[in-house]
Length: 131
Image 1 (cartoon, helix red, strand yellow):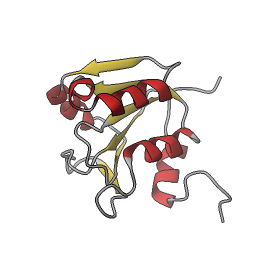
Image 2 (tube, rainbow, N blue to C red):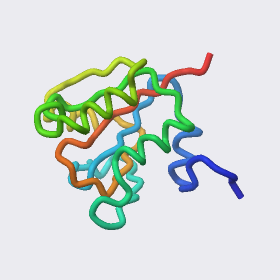
Image 3 (tube, rainbow, N blue to C red):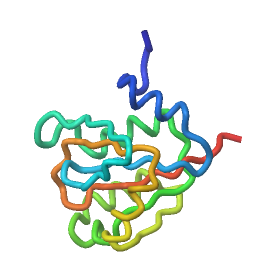
Image 4 (tube, helix red, strand yellow):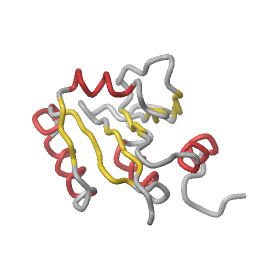
């Protein structure tokens, strides 16, 4: 049995198999997820698990070299946007229109669906290398 880190076996496997520049999306409960993309559905009830707590758990195991968010996050959910900026203070953050963000989801290795109900609580984590 695993002692810590991400305990969800499917998500843990995805993180362990990610290579440099692979994309992992952490999404709110409303983001459309293409049928062709692997989905890890963690959503239990409204708000559980939350977006930030899910991202923080993933960051315990995944090296991230940059992130992508929808430009609308800063306008519609400014508090969440500032929390994301703080969490990724040393990582470049790319902001793109939401429609472009949704199009990029189809190229992700997987999408992790949370129970988050905050508008635009979605992020694309681009995997880095540890050396």
